[in-house]
Image 1 (spheres, one colour):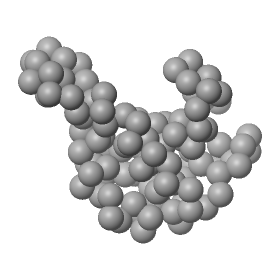
Image 2: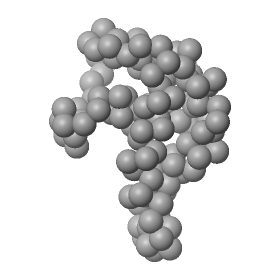
Image 3: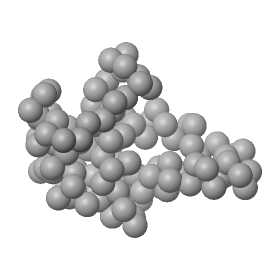
Length: 110
């Protein structure tokens, strides 16, 4: 059994954003969303909470609106040490930008 503990938002924000964050961190690899991993996460998640089909594209967009301001700041992109530490998050934001128009096609059927 595997579990995810999210101390960051702790029920203070939209649960959909936490789903998007977990999927980006857990299923996005080498610039590609691993749909089988994403589907497995959602199956487990749906045993505990509602995750209607079709919510993922919206949740990814919400996550981008909230997090892109943090990860795409000039000083993060410019500072070598910060960029190395935060490279994963920067890459996730760029993946969302590159896939913005096809998020529904890629994710909403999971």
